[in-house]
Image (tube, rainbow, N blue to C red; front, top):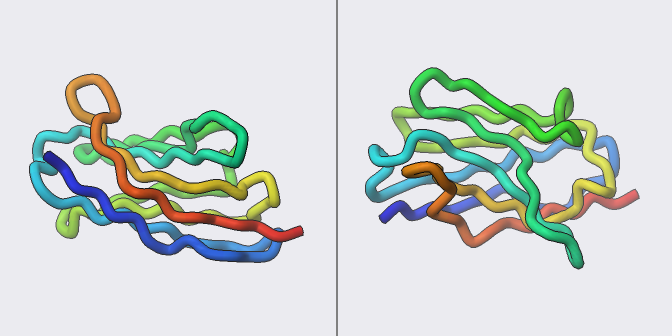
Length: 117
C-alpha cells in the first residue's frame, strides 16, 4: 500500500500562483511515477501532469503546458505541482496519484483549488 497526502490548495485570483505538494509513504519503492489529476464540478477527472521517480521525465496536459511545473524530491518522497498564471478554468479538486504496475493505483484525498476571476 501507498499513502498519499496532498496539501497547498486554496483560493487565488486569476493570474496568481499556488504550489501543491504530495507526500508519499508506505511501499513507495514499488511505484514508478507520480501524477496529478483534477476534477472540476460536473466534469470527469482529467490528467494534469506526471513525473517518473527515476529520471524525472515529465508530461503535461496541453491545457497546463507552460504554466504548471511538476517536480519530485526522491529523498523526501514528495511530488510538487507549481501552478502559475492560474485561470478560473483551473478550479478543481486536485489529486495526487501513484503509478504502479501499469496504472495509477493509489490516490490521495484531494485538495481544492479555486481561482477567482
